[in-house]
Image (cartoon, rainbow, N blue to C red; front, side):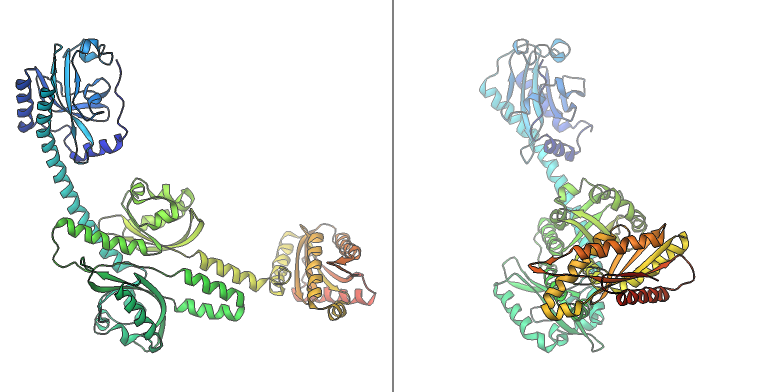
Length: 625
């Protein structure tokens, strides 16, 4: 016996069969009439409507057979669905595929089989209409055509069930889509509005009212021109004309609005045009993000560091939010199919063009909806995500951190938090809001804030580090000193502070120029770092003044002398920087702290005093207070 293989499209075939919901149901007289007529017409004892399930064949209708099902691996029909034409076995005893089949050697002792595949609306094989005789027999082309006609009647019945199931799913999807759209519009973290071609606000969400400081009714009584800063009107109007002319499909600008209290708010405005099915312009779709704080931050960063300001401007331009096609209710909907398509198009246009993750998760934490940002971030389309849960997508670590907040969202609370996600483009820091939905589960809105976090870290680094040498600056050094003294007192260990000053640096700088002076400072910083690496930390206070903190000293004076000698020795051996020969030396003052009542100011004064003693003793010396 040769067992039947499975079709290449088996998952889709099985899904189509499951969708019909006819397995293990009661017999239908309509189908029993067909199998009864087929048995009489072809003069055979058995006629069946067989559906091929995962591991069995189940008989939706049967004539002449008591069994309701048989294993799939011994069924003739599992072979029949592998082809489109009628599958005929005229003599099972001489066919190597079936000669030792239990259904041939035992009851019902099949000697002849003919089966016509039953196809779904999409052409997927669901099962067969088959006739069986206990004796071998001939089967002509005309008889095969007649069996095909009988099967067509069964197919039509199954197609009717498919159409009914599809219609029910359409209605269910429409209700869920409308609810998701309304929730997204009202809960969106960005301002959203529909604007007439004449400039009047037709519909606004709570966020846009919050940004502009107007109530919904106050906004609806105004046009966007009434609250736009005069200097921004011309550019806005020019882009609107391009939209109406079809020259562009969307645009995004930074502009100013007047709030209800007369103050100015900066926003990122993204506008697209909604057209009717006949391409007639109907209304504008607008999304605004309050960027006032960003503008203030840009100004502050510009005064601190010009280079950093250029990067902020570049990044903020890349963060323009594109929102497309928020459709108002379509006039004269033709039918339920048209309604569903229109609502889906509207929701998909919004969510797919928002530069954020937008999804709906059920109470079992499995995805029910996801916008296209998931494909760009993670490489998963919506169909794949519907078979995944939160833990599988974000990973164990991120899931465990977010779990307490997920539980709050499932209990009906709106929560927000920051977390890290591993995406195709690398790790991203996101701000996530979980919004409960009325059908249990919750919506997820996640915005990428990685660039903002990187800018904050860069700003913190610039404030605490010397830009020339990359060493910690005075502020960072004083913080490190205070922290090291506290640790020293707590652990009852000794530490030391070194003041290091390059001898004659001003004369070298004036003689050879600031560029060469900078090269000396960077070389000296690298030399210090090599000498003290692992023993403590170094910093540049100002000009040619450097300092170091040595901690966990078992024999303080001996270890300090060894470090000082190492620094002075390596500096003395340095005879060239770049293409220029040079001779350098330094004066070093050291003060030792062993957890007594000495303050940071006092130990700094001691080290400074020791350094001046070293200078008075001549170049290339050190002194311990």
